[in-house]
Image (cartoon, rainbow, N blue to C red; front, side):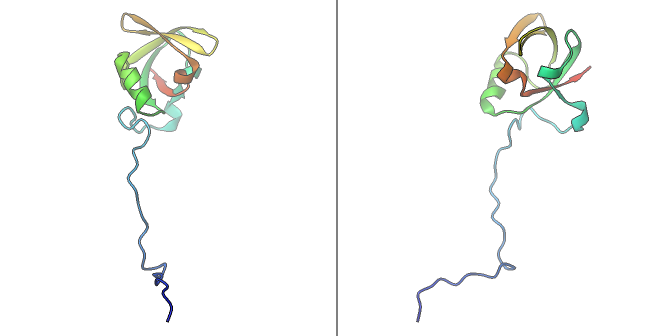
Length: 108
């Protein structure tokens, strides 16, 4: 007599699914991938709309605190290296290369 635990058949076991919060859940909505481009590749002095953020909660909170939630219209005033200065309403906001690569925009 052995003390082994019986292993269920592969056909009768159900996969274990764990709920995971996808990145940028609050700021992202589904669009055709061809419409999106990272802010780092967006043209200068052209009206843009923030359509997605590919990052975690900390960047979401930072963008909201800067007044740039999903749907905000922005414009790149100029680039300095990989960083940009944005016009958001009547404000100017400088963003470093780390943030710029994670923000997806569309040309308006």
